[in-house]
Image (cartoon, rainbow, N blue to C red; front, side, top):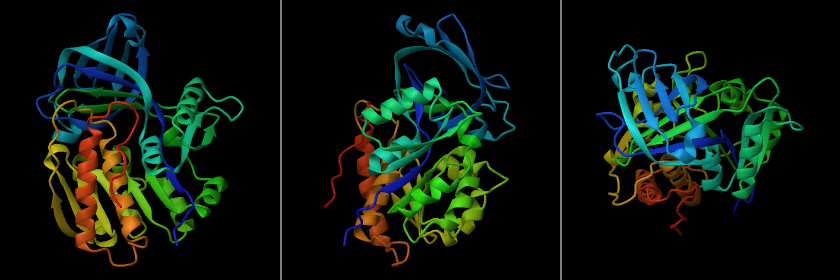
Length: 361
């Protein structure tokens, strides 16, 4: 009998400033996030990323976007995750901008749309007086028919994001985070979980997962961490081993994840995506490789990761609703990964906040 209860997604929804450049950002392909300490307005039509060890990328905005000029002061070098935190290698350059968009972003919004679930999301302000960013994001969620159950933090501001894309497929996300890092569990979260058919934690603080997972009933639990989840040493992701049923992350996050062996032994399925290099799937530690589907033409890597993860989760839940108990097979895992790779390739051709339609039975 089908489970008609909604899925529930704990994660962020941002108002993304998307900047598309005319050439690559660095010698190696970038697909990562970098935290920013602050955002400083400027009046010279330039959007600048300035790192603590000498990184300096300047993007020259078109006239119609001149009001968005700002300097993002980064918390770490742009190449720190690729080269190591002690790297002195810097990224510098002046790049022209081919297009600037303001659109809905955030893994939470993406997974809620892709899976048709309820979004639990933090904002600054109060229910009666949300801050300006919260009002804009909530309106966008309504327009896209994403059911949001916001939690408001009176002593915080809503988060902001900059997404830089290049024609090669680079994606550099820069975030100023306030609400996400202050988000704590409450009774309303537990009430929502009690009515859910599945739960997805994507970028939500590890401490929130630690508090909510013991109260979660026997339903599928998916986790899609952000780099800040990987870097959390106070509440390591590996401490959740045995409580997660599907873990999905990219190759850079996997490289930096502590406690891999614990998670491999205790997690029914883990997927690690690596863009055009394909993906790896681990079923109780046994590894499969799924090649990427070649893509030609327009390439927008935004939301490709959410498409892959959501597609795997959909196939597993449809084919084997209790996959975390019923002995997930390698054949099913491979079928889910191959389907997800096809869907991710279709996503690369989409520029609006949308996802390719499902194409399985």
